[in-house]
Each structure stands twice: as C-alpha cells, then as structure tokens.
Amino acid sequence: MLRTSLPKEMVVVGVALTFIAAAWIPVSKLLNDGLPWRRGGSMIEQVLPATQVHFVPYGIDRGICDRSRLHADITTSSDVARGAIGNTLVGHAAGAKMDVVDQNCVGRVLEFALDSRRIYWRNGDNGFTYAVVPTRTFQDTTGAYCREYHTSASHGPLLHQIHGIACRRTDGSWRLAG
Image 1 (spheres, helix red, strand yellow):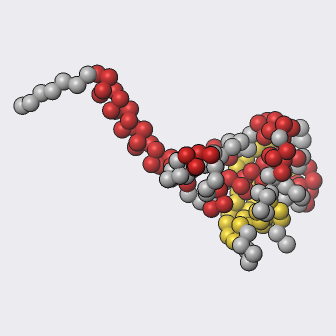
Image 2: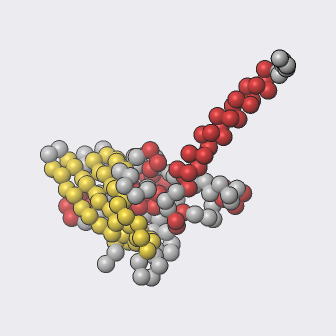
Image 3: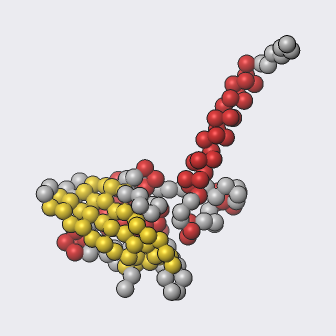
C-alpha cells in the first residue's frame, strides 16, 4: 500500500472547494432560471457572462418584500421608484390601502419572483398583510413581457383577493394590461 501525506492545509482547501462547487450548481440554476428580461447586462454578467448571476433585492428570493429596505431606497433613488409603478398595480379596496412602498413591493415581485412563488409583507402603518403570487409569464403581441398574478390583502377578518395582468415597459416599470 502506497501512503502519501498531504499537508493539512491542502486537504482543507480541497474539501472546501468541493463543497463550494457542489453548492454552486444548484444555486446558479436557481438564480438563472425563469426571468428572461433579467438575463444579460448586469455588471456581474459582463465580467462572468457564462454564470448569469442575478441579484434579487429586497428579500424576494426569500419569499418576503423587505419594506424598510425598499422604503430607504425609494427615498434616496428615483431609479427604484421608477422601477415600480406608473399607476396602481392592485385595484379595488386593497389597492387603495397600499402606499407607495407596497406598490413598489408588487413591482419588485413582478420583476424578480419566479412563477408560483408567493411573496409576503406586512405594512405596519395600516395593518394590512399582502401576498403576491406571479402565476404566468408570457409575451404579448408587441413582444412585451407580461405577468399574470394574484394578490391578497388581509386585515383581521377581512380578505381581499385580486387577479391582475401587468406588462413590463421598456423603462423597466410595470403597468396594468388593458
């Protein structure tokens, strides 16, 4: 039997690299799949075009919309506010209770969440809890990407459910279809 001895540091580095490589494949697949308008163009993708890594902000990848973080970005950047809404994406009584941060959460869900992924958040000011689920992504006759989605808003025993379709404009904002 041939016995070789490797320095302990080499073994540790080898094991660490194996775990990183094994984890990277499913993580990169999770980050790459699904959203065709998010492919290409980011700084990371210009440096590493084969990986197509996408940054998913505001906790959308974790099933939440981080209102406090989004609010901070809205107050300091006109680009974030532009990315959300030119109009209201949730109508009816539930939409009337949404503030600009809630509407931006809906826009961020449409931009970043995969189909069938439920995203939650709670507005501490009005007590409403919201959930948005994009259910289908498609291109309309003009080639714009559109998403069908369901929104629910609850406050105590009240529950409002809304179905909508929004299409992504060339400036990155989402607008109700029709």
